[in-house]
Structures are given as C-alpha cells and as structure tokens.
Length: 236
Image (tube, rainbow, N blue to C red; front, side):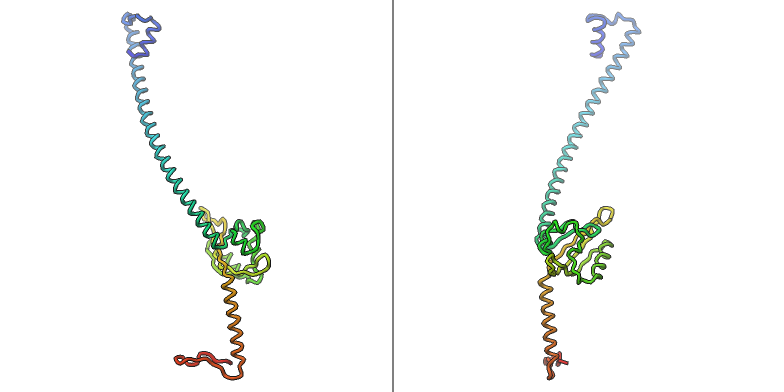
C-alpha cells in the first residue's frame, strides 16, 4: 500500500487496525485510491526526472550562451579598440566634419578647428557654409549637394575661408551616411590640406605667365629648338 495512504488510514482507524476487517467495497475503494496515489508518485518522479534533465540542459545552454557572449564581447571590444585607432589615425592626419541633412555642423575634429581658426563651440550647429569662400563658384556647391543628396560620394578641391579671412585649400571627399532603411541621416566630409601645393602651383603659373610676357615682348625673333624636333617655341 502507498506509504501516504497507509499513514492516513492509521491516523483515522488507529495504528494497529486491520483493514481487512473493512467492508469489501471499502477495501476496493482503498485499492483504487492506492493505485491513484502510486500513479501520482510515478508521475511525480517522472516529472522530477524531466525537470532535472531539462535543468541540466538549460544549465548547459546557459553556459554555452555565456561562453558565446564572452567571445562576442571580446570581439566587440577588439573592434571598438580598432575603430578608436582608426578614428585617431584619421583625426591626426585629416580634416573631418559631419553635418545633419540640412547642412548644419554636428562634429568637427581638432584639425578642422586648427585649419579654420574657429573653436568647436563656434562651429557646432552652424551651417557648413561658415567656411565657404565667397569667390568660389556657386555651381561647385550645387553639384556637390546634387551629388550627395542622391546618395553618391562627392570629390573635389575647394577654397575655404578661415575665421581671420585668409584662404585655405582642401581636397574634399563627402560621404552620405545611410540608416538601415537606406535614408540619409548625416554627411561626413574628410579633407586633406593642400594649401601649400595650390600656392606653389599658383606661384609657378604666375612665373610662367611673367616669363611668357618677357619672351613675347622681345623685339628680336626669339625661339627655342632642339636637334630632333626643330623649333619648339617662338615669340610673337
């Protein structure tokens, strides 16, 4: 007889009561109750066993997830370190800015501030044309905006104006940055300072024009030639 049922019978009829003295129908009922108790115990043991197995499996799954999370965290940390190094490398060598979709500045690096003469506080929230040189043709900027607003990268050389009114020249790449829905959320511009190169080129062009003027103003015929190609150049 089931241990729990046996205890209950003893509590009711006394410890030494002989249940065989009970009516047969009562004994049959007790047998049915005993079977029910035994079935319950079997289901309970099975459920406990199932829970233990599932718990062990869940623990293993949890350990696997934890291991994966740690591995993923290590990868993310490593990528974050690399991204910081990339950013530092770009910030130290290039002039970088970002704007919202209306063209207002949301980020500038130190190189931008140094080249333009503005502080970060003076630039953030301002239209990017704060550094636009008034002598630059409007068509350049129209082409730029038409290009980047169509989600295309733009590249060109621009003359900008610093806070003190001086000019500087930058080789400029502008990239539209898109969200997961392929909508433009901001623009990033990366520039290199080419002021020295442009000034040197302008100086050479000026010297060339001056020499050409002297060459053309000669009263006598002046020309340059070589043995292979003959006359290369003659004055007017």
